[in-house]
Amino acid sequence: MKKVPSYRDKLLELSRIYKITEIQNYIKRKKNLTTQQIEHILKKNNVPIPKDFNVSFFKKSISNPLSKAGKGVSGIYSNTTEGVGKFFKRTKRGATGLYDDTTGGVGNFFISLWRNSGNLGIGILNTIPKVFNTVSSFIADALVNLFSSFYNSEVEKTKTNKLIKSFGIVVFICALGITFFTLKENYEGSDVTQSVPVEKEKPKKIEKQKEVKKKIEKKPQKKEEQKQVKKPEPKKEKSPSQVTELVLPNLNIKTETVLSLFEDVEYDLKTVRYQKRVKPIYFTQFPKDLDEIKDTKLKKETFIKIVLPLVVAENDKILDDKIKLKRITSKKMTTDKEKSWLRLKLREYKVKNSDISELNKRMDIIPVSIALAQAAKESGWGTSRFALEGNAIFGQWTWTGQGIEPLNKGKNEGHKILRFPILRASVKAYKNNLNTHRGYSEFREKRHNIRKRNKSIRGLDLTDTLDKYAQTGKEYTDILEQIIKQNDLSDFEKVQLTNSVVKKDIQL
Image (cartoon, rainbow, N blue to C red; front, side):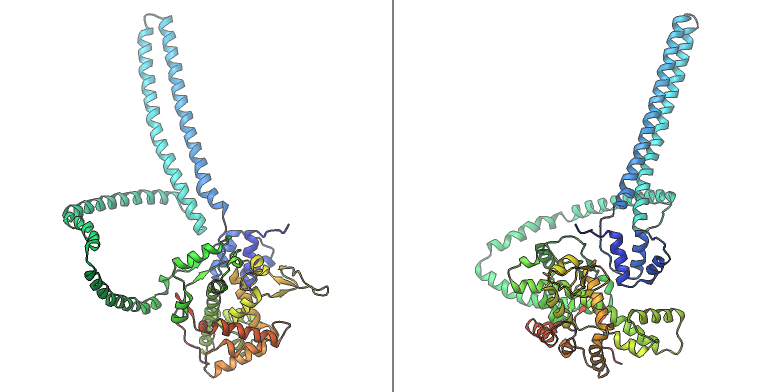
């Protein structure tokens, strides 16, 4: 049985892949970090995190407040029973006094009865604030634990109680206002609401000639609607925060669910090819039953829809870094923060002797068409065992890291296929491989020369430089070129995310 990595192991693996030095330094000093601390550092470095089920959230937010509420209720019960027991004991003593002493016993009995009744009433009244305190503390504890689990910080209970009270007052006032205006509108607009059903029934009684006229009138309306849709597009580019990223959880999602999701969000490759925009939908793994799609074209389109946003997102990060590098190197004086960033990038791209020109050459995008073609070739369009079990899209080898054992491996071959916690980590590692490994220096040199001529980087111009990626050499590059042409992957070269700012080609 293969040992399933824990959620904390996945986070540590992500920190190793994305080279988060802060976590690595803690590990070297043999300081154990909690899962929440690791998550916080990864989020601070903009690393996508798989969404796994967190048991501590339910313990903090539900089970602990319920147990506290149970203790409060049991305390109320015990206080009430003790008060009642004392009442009956004192009543019994009063009755015995009546039996023993006929003269003064009657007076003492009624006096004790009056006192005990008063004590019982006071005890019952005392339970009311206890009940209120128990309920309010339960709600306060629940909200405190809820906010603490989300933001990893403690919230003061007194402030939470004030927040609950103020929130309740605001809700009550809003409810009264909404009710008042709703009743007012219903009273004033009763004639309008009665005409709605009549308008819905009118089309059924219209003659054919009128229907033809309506169809003719609808056509210019569609053109006007298209114009209205095209106008807001530049506004979306100015405010990219309006479009949120969608990260699919690490679950065994079926292909049928994936296809229905694409329909819901109107994710169509024809539109992407035309508008050069793709929505930021990030899958953490391929659907296990992707190979069950009989239609080859549909299978390939589904694969491209899953991989394309991941490739474009990583290219966007590289372009942002490249723009920042150009801005820093053009300055005469750099800050300590900028120097620290430069040292980090020199280590990430494995540049020796602080050679900025070499860093500028290595820090560049991988053409989208090449990335999609290699992903399709190495993963069998997302259906290979390595892609389904280890999120290995590009079939990278490893001799030291965690990997999957190939079935048809020779006796003298000791490599494994590198395993990744999520698909985007595989894309990140693939781009680091092409941008740093000495076997792809010709690829980087040719790409740099294209940059110097201020031309767009296209996959078909660089496929011949990747003959060392596979043992078949020239045959491998011919297959990549064939995949790009047959599937029109060059159409995706200039695609950008819908929530990103438009970036022009960088000029050196």
